Length: 463
Image (tube, rainbow, N blue to C red):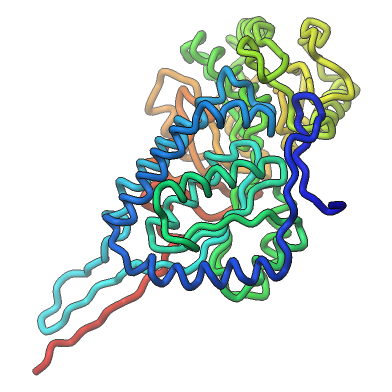
């Protein structure tokens, strides 16, 4: 079919899988079925929902040996680290299941004689989840499990790059015995995604993707009174103070910059290092970067795979070239990485110094294996630079002074402040952003709030 959705593998450029896109009629029937199924699902107990969702997690994790190489073929993550996504998926899912009862418990104000008053958290109806390809399971599970635990039904639309991930969800839910219609998958192009958002049965949209994509989703939903959660981009900074544990900072920030080939919304993309340790830090950072092994993600020795597609790699290459033309210095010789190939997704990592905020590489999301490192003379200078961005997803401070980290973190415009770690989602904490990083919240008890609505009961006793 000419209009088939196609997964072109970054491994070798081959077509890995194709699927026919859903039609307007398919969308109509899927949402109608989801609406019918949701009414029955909402009537089940939280214990029963937990039983089914736990069985789903068990079924999913049992597929790990198939999922890991499948991920490599679809989006390029090396099999040597692919199991981490399955483990993270399990951690988040089980946590959100475990806290559902308390998170969904009625809110009861102080007793009032002659009245019974409480606020229930009731499901919205149908949650339409639009997931991204870079962490296809971790991103989707953030919304799918709590939406179901809250009594909603879910329609999942996955990226065209990771269509098979949506089907793995569907397969595991079928094995878990989830009632028919409560969770469904639609493979959609952009035009039909808009149709789904505008379907009368769609009650909430949970989107993860680019800033441009977020604007498009918001525009599509603008004619309807439905909630929209947007997890968008990042240009996440880190500040390495002079008192940082040096070796820990270097090791973790290299990983934070280059894991998943830098294709993470919360990857470290800007580093600010105190002048007292700057030269030593840069030397160690470069030496650690040279230890990466770029190659086929199917090779167990590889820990840096290809980017998702050549156009994405070319975007990062252009950012680097522009920065160098403006005075930046590139410290990594791409020729060291024998599998780095121009005009391909296989891109060597790069470390830039002599950068500043006039350069796109320090302002626009790179979403690739490049990092700019700037020298700073004080905490105040570092804070000003960290806040000089339209994004605000995460920021990390590397220091042995807990009080200083708390004080500095209070002044950073960001959704999450890390100290001595980065690029991690703790399911006990709210995952949220400010500015162009989006709006809304997933994970933690707070993550349940956007997937339910309050319903007040004001009951006066009979005289």
